[in-house]
Image 1 (cartoon, one colour):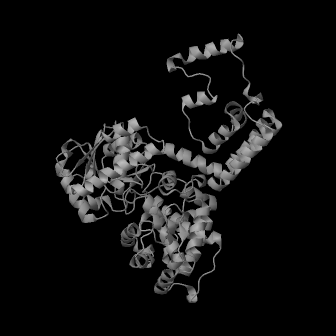
Image 2 (image 1 turned 120 degrees about the vertical axis):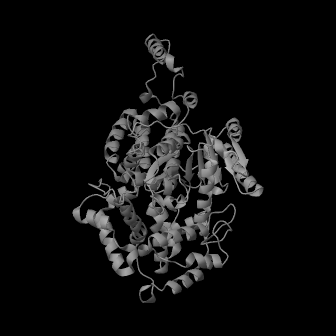
Image 3 (image 1 turned 90 degrees about the vertical axis):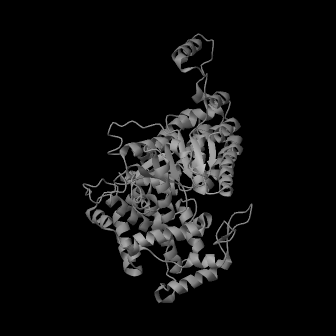
Length: 584
C-alpha cells in the first residue's frame, strides 16, 4: 500500500481507522469485506468482469452513478483531532509490535501529511518517502526473502527433469506426540486422509485429542469455520497396527530422536507398505542414511522435517540423500504446497540445513553465560535484535530434554566446535524444566508474562565454577553489540560451512529457512543476507579474535575466510562445489 497513492486513497475510501489497520498489518481481506467497507464497487463472476466494467463506466459517464474521485474525498476521514488520535494510537502500537521496521512509521507520517494538507500533498510526500525507504536495508532484506521464496520452486535435478508429481491423498503418521499430531493436523486441514498410528490405546487417544485441540483452537480464533473443522476431523483415523499401511501413498515417521527405534520402524513400514509408498522421517538431526541403512528402499526414503507447531509453522525442510529419487522429492514438494507450507530442499547431514546452521546459537549463549554475562541481558538483547525471544527463554519454552538430546548429536558430529555446558543438566537436577513445570530460567504463572527467576543464579554460578572459563576467574566485559555478535556470528560461520558443502541449493534458501523455521527477523533478510549487510570481513575478524581468546568454537571456517579476504559476498554463488562434497 506504501506506493501508487494507496496511503492517500485507502483512508478516503474505507475510513482512516480501517485503512491504518490494513496498511500496518498487510492482512488480506475477502472481496465481500472489501465491498462492505467501500473499497470495491461490485463483485461479479469472472466471465462477466469485462461486461460489468464497461457498464459501470457507461453509468458514470451517463450520470447514472457518481464519479467518486477518491483522492479528494474527506467524508470518511473524520475531524482533524480524531485523525490525530487515531494516528497517535497507531504509532504507539507500531512501536510495540514492529521494532526495527521504519516503513510503518514512514507510512503513518505520509498518511498524516495527506490528512492535514490534502490528498495531493500526501501523494507528493508518499513518492518522496518511498524513493528513500525502498533503498533501505530493511527493504532490501524483505525483497530478498520475497524472491527467495519464489526461488525454492526450482531444484536442480528435480524440477528440471520433466517429471509430474504423483497424487498423494492418503498419508500415515507414526507417533501422535507434539510433532505427529501437528503434522496430522496440517494434512487433514488440506483434505488429505490420515491414518495415525500409536503403540497403545492410551497414546493413540492422546494423539487424537491433541489433533482435535489444534482444530478447536483454529475455530476459536476464527481461523477455521466449524463446518470445515468437522470435515477435517472426518479425514482422521487412529490405528494400533500396520494393516492400513498397504493403501498409503506416504508414511511420515514422527517418533522421538532414537536411532534404533527409527531403524526398526523403517524396516517395518518397508514391509507393510506398497513398493511405491514414500517413506519419510520428521527427524530434526539424525542422518537419513543411518535411519534407512537396514532397508532396501533408500531411493524412497526422504526427510520431511516440520517445525513446531507443525500445523502453524510455514517451513517444510525436505531432506534428500544421494539415493533419494527425484520423483519422491517432487511428490513431497507438491504435498508441502498443498498443505500450505514452503518446501525447501536440502542435503543430508546431521541437523540438515536449519538446525545445523543454528546449533551454535544456544551454544554461543551458554559460552557467554559461563564467561560471566547475565542470562537475562542476553535474552533481552536478542529479543531487541528481532527474534521472538532470547535463547534461554526459548529453552524454557521447548523443554530442556530436547536441547540435551540434540546437543549430543551435534557434539558427536562436530566435536571440534561444540561447547559442553553443564547448565541444563544442573537445572534439571534442581527439578526445573522450563515452561513445562512452570520453573526454569524464568517463573511461569498462568495469565502472567514470564519473569526472571533470581533463584536460578546460584545454579548459574555452579555452572561457571565447573566450566572455569572466565579469564582470571572474573566475568568478561562486553558491549551489547558484542553480545549479539558473539551469539549470531558463530551461526553465520556454520551457515558458511553449510554453503561450502552444498547442503542447500543457494544461499537464499538458507535465508528463507532461517526466517520461516527459526524466526530470524524477515526485515534483516535472513542469516546470510544479514551477514553480508554487516560485512564478511567484520564477521571473520571478530571470530578470529574470539577464537584466539576463547577457543575453537569461534574458529572461522575456510569458506568465510576465503570470502572475507577476497571481498566476495557470502551469498554469491560458489564458482564450483566438488560433486564429492556436495550434499545435493
